[in-house]
Image (spheres, rainbow, N blue to C red):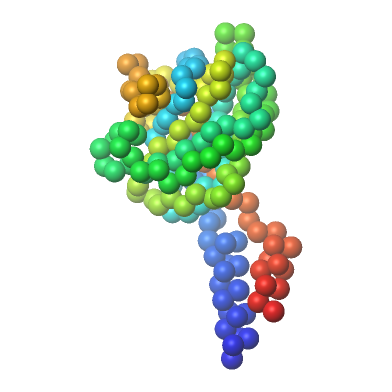
Length: 197
């Protein structure tokens, strides 16, 4: 009886992790060069998002350009809005510097090449459909977050300075996509199954 229960639990866990999320994008505010209006260089920028479905965020795709070498990691923070549409009062649910990988888009602004930047979260972040969240992206010295104008989605981007967030005087939105984690591979499934022996 105990063995049968273990098998059922493992099968349910495997199904939930592997098949619970059918889409790879939990939020899209995708890059289009024709919509690029410029780049901003504050300590960090924050933009809002509302998930398309309840699930896990496994990675983020950003768009930045650099005056110097690209950083090996980027600070990312996700907070949940408390209902006032203000990142200063939001509740933090994730914060960490994550490794970054870079691919050139082939585009440039002000003679600076625009890169697609991918960061995989060290721990997937759980978000729920219908809630408003904020994604903060830290910017290293001489790096620029690419933005679009006018605002297309939700609220506009904010910048961090002097210990708090400030709303830009102009309407701006960043480009970013939030993706679900990669499904479990066969060897991960075997490790889960063996852990019950």
